[in-house]
Image 1: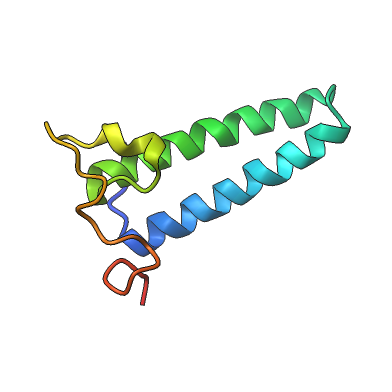
Image 2: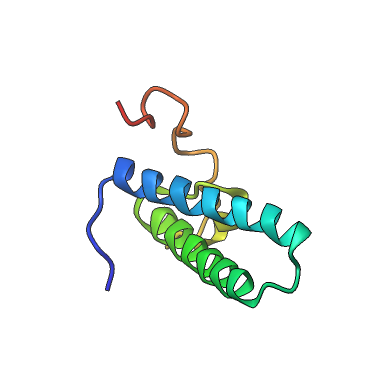
Amino acid sequence: MKQNRSRCQLLGEINEVSFAVNDLHLYLDTHPCDEKALTCCSEMIRKRKQLLKEYAEMYGPLTIDSADLTDCDRWKWMEQPFPWEKEGACR
């Protein structure tokens, strides 16, 4: 079940999970057989994909990878403010 989160909350969670994925990738570069890290990385990647999908459905695509996840029959990638633009920022 999806939680009703604000744009800022969802962006914060995406950032946290993305950081974990990046950190795990770096760790796995030097420890490629660590099964616990591999499992954790897979879980974080799955969670990140789900969060990006949720964000795309609620606010529009955040990455080009989620541009086709909106419930729309047209290309909406450029129709929203990007997070770093004033209207899209968490201020």
